[in-house]
Length: 268
Image 1 (tube, rainbow, N blue to C red):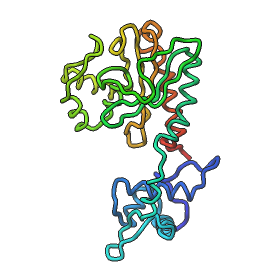
Image 2 (image 1 turned 180 degrees about the horizontal axis):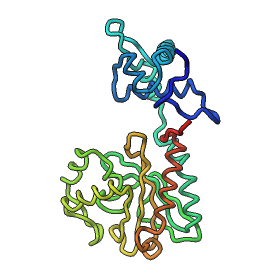
Image 3 (image 1 turned 60 degrees about the horizontal axis):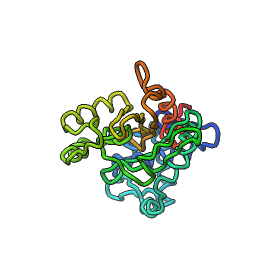
Image 4 (image 1 turned 90 degrees about the vertical axis):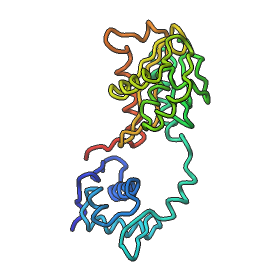
């Protein structure tokens, strides 16, 4: 069989991508869902033919990234993966990719923009950017958290968590930062469902009266949230007739970040 296997593993080959490396990476990613797999299962998951899959698996075994059970003949991840995992730099790529995008928006629209993640049951601000010509929103400092039921990004981040995590958070007392904050668990649960369905959150007056925040998710190829991109400013600047004024701009920014992080598979 030739090296022409297509399907799911047919990633971009233009630019700086090397086809064999992309395919090897696709093989490694399949073990995230199934730790032990047969040759047929790996080939099916990647869309490659068995001959190509076997050659790539043997190469990965020789490098220590894959091992094979001699009895069952099933494949799994090798110790080299575990050794490298300890050297991962948290949020390094995320910051380097998202900050320039958010800085451009802040400069263009004279608003404050934020990069945030869901960590330790909280919405954590990784970066805050503003344009010197506009008003800087101070209420969410870098390294700080907000109540999970207030603000655009916190509610968006919570909306994309597992049902177990959402229920655990809703079982806790919900703080009312302003009278506009949702503190009823049933109402907040319903609102989170709406947020996830539409794919963005627009919060008005629930952190500071007179300010609004728009947040959009950056999702991986499994639909899991990686981070939130958000902006905040005076409510009249943000409210549109049918949707938030800068929604299209923020959704475009999220897509740019997704692609730059390699979370979107380009077609060949």
